[in-house]
Amino acid sequence: MADAELAQRAKSLLDTLCEKPRFAGSAEEARARAICRDELEAAGFTCREITFDYSQCPARWGAPLSAAAIAATIVVVTRMANEGRPLLALVIGGAIIATLFFVDAYAKRRWITNFPIQRATSVNLEATRGAPRVWLVAHLDSKSQTVPMLLRIAGSVSLVVVLVLTALALLMALVGLEAVNGLWLAFQIAAVVAAVPGVTCFVGNDSAGAVDNASGVVAAILAARSDDAPRDLGVLITSAEELGLAGARKMADTAQSGSLFLNCDTVDDVGSWRCMYTLSRPERITAAALNVATRIAIPLRITRLIPGILADNMPFSDRGMQAVTISRGTLATLGRIHTRRDFSNTMTGRGAADASVLLSVLARELT
Image (tube, rainbow, N blue to C red; front, top):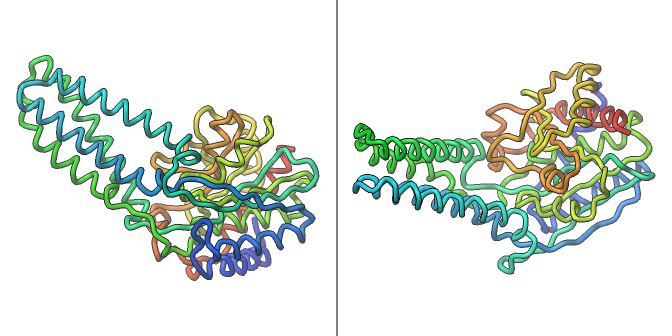
């Protein structure tokens, strides 16, 4: 894998990018973007900055409102069931959850761009060399949250589990199984407890964003500069990923059909390597990724994107293009994402350097 010199280059660039938090649209992010531009232009890329505007509202308030709405739904329907109206509870609960599902899907795809409240402006960096059909992608912005990602995911999964168990209990009540009547209060308490991480999850700017996602940016830049990378290559350094994938959504709107996107997000020095996707499996990329991983001795797993996590491959997949996210980490990695503990002091650069090798060879394999 990566030699000591490449790891040292990765460490140096990682420390430089992580000197301050890089909230989307901030002067600190602009400074980091200028560093990325210099690196890419030195490798023969033509760079341009693409300004876009979007709404921060869905990303800032989506998680708290969604968790609160689901918990409230569970409380309401279990109270109905406790009053002897399980059928009405099931119908109303199903209608509310279906509405929430469609509103959430619509908000992620439309409101990020069009919602009139909390409008903001940021900038993507697009770098091209030759006529690229393969693109390396990484988001530059960082954010903090009042609740670490690991705890937020655990709360979201727990809330879904309580919701499913509540639905099953309602069905049992409909067929006359009286034993479930003693569970309604327990479901209410469990729903409220599971919703706490989501309801109290607010966005801030107190994280240096080392593993998330200076590591991915470093990997993409070093891959683009590698002698193993193809001559025809594109690099997208996106902004506002942490606020609803706004930058990637902007780029997906104009992406050329048939392009392939290799997003790199969250590369720790230790942990499992994953190549993740959404919607249908991108067979061309995943087959090539497994082949390359075998050649360079990386134990890469092909999986769907971890539930509760958004990544910049998603807008491109939504547009019918093949896209994946390359990542590496452990549960401890998730535990420090979006916190003040996500700084570069504890990172060696080895993970980002290894990821750059994987990306450069994979990009060549796909061209």
